[in-house]
Length: 276
Image (cartoon, rainbow, N blue to C red; front, side, top):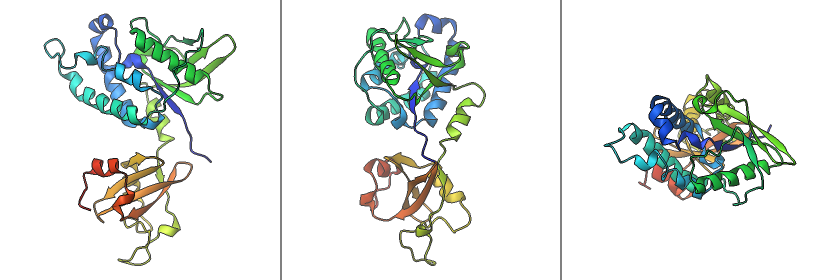
C-alpha cells in the first residue's frame, strides 16, 4: 500500500468575503472563519495548490485588509488572522505551484470564481482550475463549508472535451474533516534496526521506545514538524532529536539523531533549541 497523495484546493470564499453579504450574515461568516482555522490546523502546506500570487491576494481583500481597522471591526479577526498569516507564509515556501495557464472556456460547478472577486483573484483561480482539470487523475480534494456550499454535491470542472469530478469535503459538516484526515494520520511502527542495544548504549536507536509502549513515540510523531518526507521532533526526556522516516502506508519508524547538522534549520528554529 502506497501513501495516499492528494492536492488540497481551498474554497477561497471562506477568506475573501463579499462585504455586503458579511454585513447581513456576520455570524455565519465568523463560523466559517473558525472552520477555516480548524482546516488549516490539519492541512500540510505542501499539499496545498496555490500560487504565491494568489495567496498574497488574501491579505489585500476583505476582511483581512481591515484586520487593523478595529474602529469598524472587532478583534475577532486577530487570533485567526495570525494563524492565516502564518499559514500563507508557509504556503509561499512549500505549496505546490503550477503554471499561469488559463484553459479556454473552463467552468466549474458550482462556480468558484465569485463575481465580487477582484480581477487578479479571478485570473489566479482560473489558473488553479486549469491545473486540476489538466490532471490525468482527479487527485485534488476541494475543501469548503456548509454556509458557502448550499447543498451542492461535488465540485466539477468542465470544458468542451472533458468533465472532472473532485472529492469535496464540507469541512464543518459532521465528522467529514476529521474522518478525511484520519486516513493520513502518521502511525508509529518500530523498525528492529532501531531497537535499543542495551541500557544506556544506543546505535541509531530510538531512546523513547521501550519495545512495548508506543505512546511516547506516537505522540512525538503526531506533534512533529514535517520537512520533506520526514517528521522531526525533540524528545525532551532524552534530550535528543528524533527523526521519523516513512515506512509504508501511513507508517513511520523513528530513531535518535544526535548530529544537529542533520536537522533542518527550520525544525531547530521551531523547537528553539540551539544549545548544540
